[in-house]
Image (tube, rainbow, N blue to C red; front, side, top):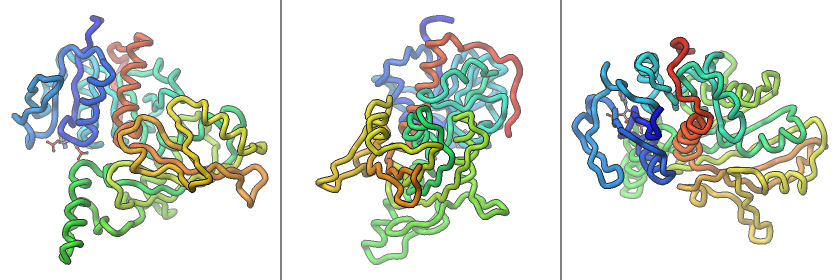
Length: 348
Ligand code: A2P
């Protein structure tokens, strides 16, 4: 393996793809050749990377030749169509979609939580769901000290979770409403500007939506805690790109607020934001474009002796997606884990 890594970004024109490009530059990732891939719609368009104009290509059978790492963020169906081909061509795929996350042969990684899982990869590593990453960052440091028994989380999710076009849609809707017009809704099922609605992913027979089940199942997999009791309510709110979450935690043993605060103040990738005098706590505008997950309003749950409440905000595009993926790529480099797959893996 040469010191320079040949990277392909699948979904380079999207919101996460654009952030991946920024992060590769910002973090001095040792990029050799960089291939920008998207749908045929974007073929021929140009994107600047460090002063160089790169031409976007429509993904095709030859796209992954001599590529070491594929950072994929073009949706589940695109990943299902191309990941195995990229692995066959000798690349490691870090996949931001949900296509492979629950496959037992695919590590699901938050580098601050379970970096050791990377050693088992067979060509594909999954990047977890954004709300799951952000919550995990804030609660795993506590879980390591006193195990969690139960989590009840409510999310306040920004438009960016549905992609760049969804972010534009919210802006267009806001302008339309302010001009006294009826807002168009094409990406989302309902107007999101000046509104909110329960997450619009498909519902299961128990009444949970897919996003809620991702938080439940992925957290259990990342924490290696298959029995952990979790319930989630996911809601889309008219915020552009940072998610917020209200999290109720029940531990096996009581935690004092001071203990929890001390642990989180020292946790990597977490920033404690609490000014009780000023009633100032994490807000999406403060979390936007930041790497850290902002955590605050840590308080005793008055209804349970082993319970804590906390509030967090994190940039959905950055730590919720692109940053976590680049950190996984850095981890592969550090541990010398960029290698051809043992066998192709199936989507789950
Ligand atoms: P394109 O811009 O050509 O549609 P977002 O999540 O922000 O909406 O971005 C989605 C990304 O995934 C975009 O880069 C988009 O490219 C890409 N994409 C969508 N469908 C496909 C596909 N069938 N093949 C390759 N890339 C795709």
